[in-house]
Image (cartoon, rainbow over all chains, first blue to last red; front, side):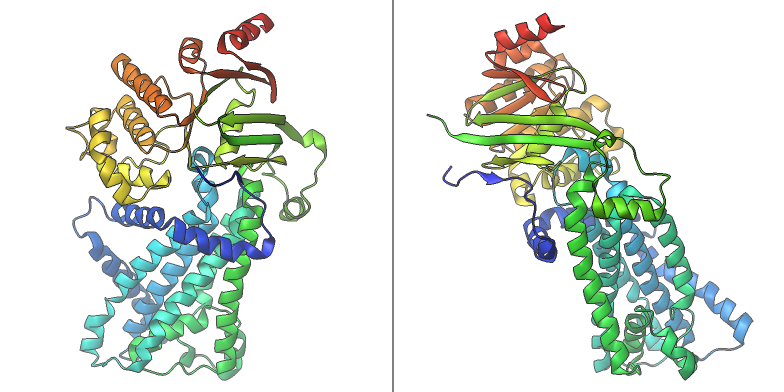
Length: 276
Length: 245
């Protein structure tokens, strides 16, 4: 053995968090892919329809919202069912990823106490498997596009960007709060409420076009409005239709929350393990 | 002159005694930020531990329940960060403890080999190469493609031991797992440990089975209340242990 002794569990600078996590992802990609495979295999095991549930679930959910919309507002535009389905899929990805990463340390405490590997992997695999489920779910749009005679154009490029932003935001906020949640479990209860309330305050059942210009200013404070609209309009073949100032705000919000989440998580990780 | 592969330098580890379950968000925020509560809130699990382990050594750790043996192994494997002092090491470390904690009961034995293997830090290709020997050693030939929920507790432990001992780390830490399975498998796992030992790799064992410890360890340490009370030849340390009782 040629190399020298090296320090285990070294205390690293707060600012190095994102870099450390990036290094760990590359070093442990087998573990991440095995964990994601496990999650996906287990999600639909013993079910006849298997992966089709990724399509059926948002489809059925959207059916309910469609009926609800008709009851409240009367007959909607022909493309409305597609908009709702896309909103439901994206919001599902966000809320599952966020709640999953917030509880990632508390849910896996047994494993964390027996084996060492970087603990951000739990949150990363949660977001990763939900991203894959969302991408599989998006194929439900294909028959709608055929039926509504929408031909995909260059706007489709907004779809991956939107998905990346949603994943960044849920991972960032999730990592930011995962450590705090080991000390005080109120966090996870509160954020289950936040994701439920956010459903109504984000363009899932409605679209930004339905909102008055005055209200839109306040609605766009919610960083999820831009990514959802990106995915929705991208598939619908329309331009985003949101001022670039708000788009920049949303992209910055997601990026900063991811970087901050990585820093906070790495900084407090070693201390909170003792509280599990 | 053999090489030092683990160096534990003046390491202390404290655990918070009370959980802040009823605390307000504000108070827990303050605790997380400042993290300087009074000393009486802590349980000292390890108190200024100094220890060096050389390559090829089989070090046994004995001590009463709650004396800090497992905490020391977990600190060496990286699970707990020392509050004071530093731990240095050389080479890949694997901790065998709570065998099969990372198993999923709904996946097959084979799938669990990949899963547990990657938890211990090994690629799927590396596990492919070890698969035959793992299945052979665990004696689970007819069961390996069955879901784990059909296994008995002993079979799961056997699979866990087979995977953890097959991956051949440079340094193996064993926490009370020598007594898994039936008599036959216990003898086999003892033989596997001796084989690892002969391969001149380093092993640290925590066990209450003094007969085994006497047989295989080259050195014993005794821990009490987080401090090393004795360090030396197995027979002598075991004598000290019983004289103190």
